[in-house]
Length: 126
Figure 1: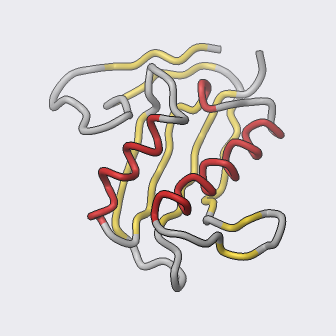
Figure 2: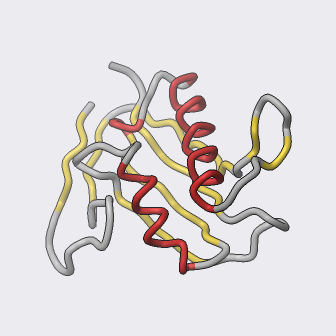
């Protein structure tokens, strides 16, 4: 199982690689919302708190699949407001490791009070 970042063209504007080559079995994690698994409710707080909850939810699913953030090859971020882009990068840097996975970030309409959703694709196994 390997992950190799590919660079060229415009430099990335955050913690992601422009492209990444990966080999091995994969897990595809569905989009996660900032839902507290203990209560089943939207977590309280602003963007940073919601982003941390989403990353915690993804971390749990990755672990259950036998993976972690060091094996993520692609993640997609859906923001309610692109003005949260810089805050997203700050939170992401606490979870992601180099070589950073590839990323797509778009602004979308999300459920009421939900500020972001993230999904990912990761390698599985040793």
